[in-house]
Amino acid sequence: MTQPTRGQRIDGVAVAATLRAEVAQRAAAYTAAQGHPPGLAVLLVGDDPASAVYVRNKVRACAEAGIASFLDRLPAQTTEAEVLARVAALNTDARVHGILVQMPLPRHIDPGRVIAAIDPRKDVDGYTVQAAGELMTGLPGLRSCTPAGCMRLIAHTGTALRGKHAVVVGRSHTVGKPMALLLLQADATVTICHSATPDLGAMTRQADVLVAAVGRADTIRGDMVKPGAVVIDVGINRGADGKLCGDVNYAEVAPVASWITPVPGGVGPMTIAMLLSNTLDAAER
Ligand code: NDP
Image 1 (cartoon, rainbow, N blue to C red):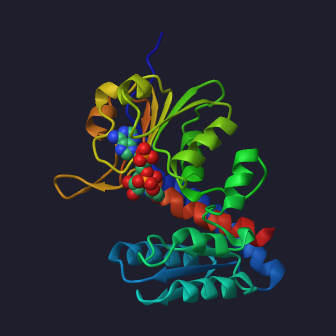
Image 2: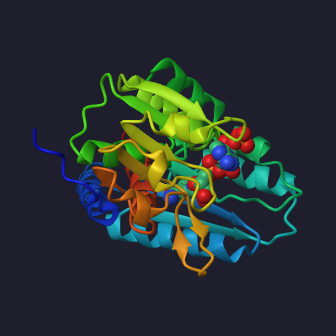
């Protein structure tokens, strides 16, 4: 029997570029039919430098795809009531089909309350309770960008998920849980691990598809991966050398895995591409 090729790099930049080109075509068709472009509003509160970079990238990606973007920069001392009022205004703004509130918000603002204020039809991050409920019950709706992007990357490898064992490490509302539900919807058998999982390696070694969404470098080592597994690394961390890295030790895991996403250049670019795609979905509805 031939061994599967090991260590094939999943090129998130290339997969995202294909999706962005599709979105640009859809955006052009939408604009021609409606007489106005699809629109995404981005609300940035405070002056967190990383958030400013993320927002700039999203605004640039919108311009490249033919989506109008409306950037609302509010000072750090903006009150929760003022942020809620901005969201309410965006909910009724006909030029805006998607609303993204950049996280984290300043500490005096409750993110849950702000998310709950977003019109679910414009919730392109898929963070509202309505979006979570639609995902849980399998109804159509806007899916969280990062997990949806991971599903596209898995599809790109040609892996049929039906009957496979998928292990998700991390159970956040924004990544781990929706990821697990999408894998379940695709007929994988799903295990979710978290900080109270006693023997993480015993779980991850069973995975045909392993998704790491922890936020800690080197969480997944070479001896924790089943030979031939597909490994998706969501984590964004600073390594001891100061460089960007994921949750997976790439050098150790790549020779074991069949497919693996790098960090950077894996999941990250897909998250933005899915945001554009969700904005088009919201506009077309
Ligand atoms: P959270 O901090 O919200 O969740 C982390 C999860 O990891 C928690 O469920 C936690 O468990 C679990 N965890 C922590 N330590 C361990 C451990 N030792 N073993 C097993 N599980 C553990 O993070 P997010 O889900 O928001 O993000 C995860 C990572 O993904 C971060 O690095 C983030 O920056 C990155 N990210 C990347 C994106 C991209 O576009 N590439 C988008 C979004 C996030 P418990 O629940 O028990 O605390």
